[in-house]
Length: 417
Image (spheres, rainbow, N blue to C red):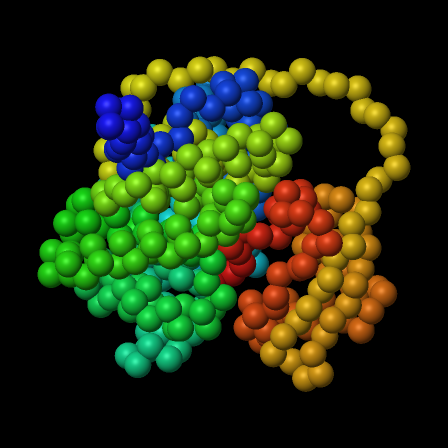
């Protein structure tokens, strides 16, 4: 009985330790190499290549890019303020330049907060007003009966609420209510092919609202929705340990690591996810800067919700560029991709072979050249809905393929609103 009691005591202690979600003690060399992959992207300063997510990811990590980091934020400010604050009827002949989408504006506000800045003043108030206007337009698109369709996605909708929340800017209860309704009625979300990423972003928005108490009349409803999101994400864990897939796991962990409802199930699921991520880092799975910028905060036990009160004085190690290796001549590896389009009659299915690392545009152009497919038809403004309903590619390989990584970014933040 004495040995049995000791065993039960030990198991009880392990259970208690595994109640919270912690991602700690990841190999520092692997983390540094991950951060180094962002450095070349910080040299790309054209408006179409600037990405606030890169800056946010670094600021929430244990890594820094020194003077390059400050220059990148300066470039973000110049580009975003110029495009977002430009009058809609500009006389400078640049009307053809697309303004950032709701998701991009939200990420820009997160970047400002990551630098411990609150939006304010005339320019800052205009940015806040524009983001609120985006959300109001989307609320109207959903409709009073919740039967309408967003112009963007629930991912961007949740991101917009989160960005305003970390700046302590309240949005109307009716705006928050649309996101709450979508989570409460799963069948409604499934109409838009909801992903783990979407659920995680909604959960991060709810976490911020709960901590900030910006919508007190909906507090109980927000808390229930947050628990529901956590349960859904835990149920989406794969046998390998990922939540949904390898690329949706970082955002899911951002939510779970800040969970206010620790359970043994949560702790064990996060231990399993940590092991899967460690293996992915060893195999250099993460190459896309968007995915890397979501993962770096997790490896520092941070999330976007920490931008409520960011620690801008925390020590961070300076990143040095990775040593260059001589290029090796090799035959490019090709990947078979099955392209399926639903919602059209007759339905479209076509298989193409493309080099590893091909972009979505490369795949679509290949399909146009070798199959019954028109790229211009799908990406036109009139048929944007058909494009959004297009199913993702079924790669005849594992989820760790770099080609697939570039396709699975859920918010499609580069699309116009």
